[in-house]
Image 1 (cartoon, rainbow, N blue to C red):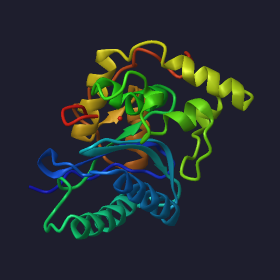
Image 2 (image 1 turned 90 degrees about the vertical axis):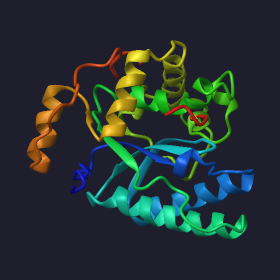
Image 3 (image 1 turned 180 degrees about the vertical axis):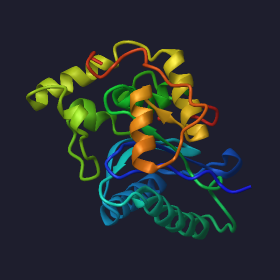
Image 4 (image 1 turned 180 degrees about the horizontal axis):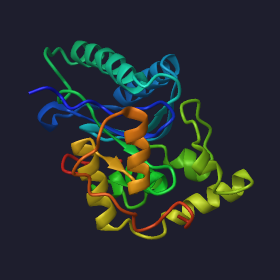
Length: 241
């Protein structure tokens, strides 16, 4: 059966998940996380992909990113990154064979309706996995950058994030305020299902917009508005998506 075409128009954010094969560990020590981040910086720059949020879990990775010019930018970035990291990992741990679970999963994310919810979903992964009590305690995510203003050469703020406030201090405070309320399970389920099935997270109007741009008819998406929108103030162990 032919693979379902990946919807990836330039300028539209995507939630990306790359899993370890059979949920195997992909990061064994601090230097592994550092190596992955360094190559993510390199290849996101090379293929002109903006990285807005991320979390590196022990056996998988979440990214929120936008291809800026090429609709294949994210695929090219993930392929180059995956190959480089596998070579590094196999050499370091004297192993052979695949590390990743086939091709990565992704879903398009509506700016207005789901973007900030996906930010929260990604950065709360370590909390849902009971690895930490608060997202700020987890080192290998973008939370400290987006919530505290920690300097980063990897993170590219999305314009929806920038619209959270007129000044940096206001944006950071408003972003932290988003995390004061627990992310609803309905939102978690929708994000997990959408990314696993390659669906579109957004309203019917957003779905029609994507159909018009890509020429692909979208079927069976369980669309609708999320529990909170971006106008409201508005990372994982092996079993967390």
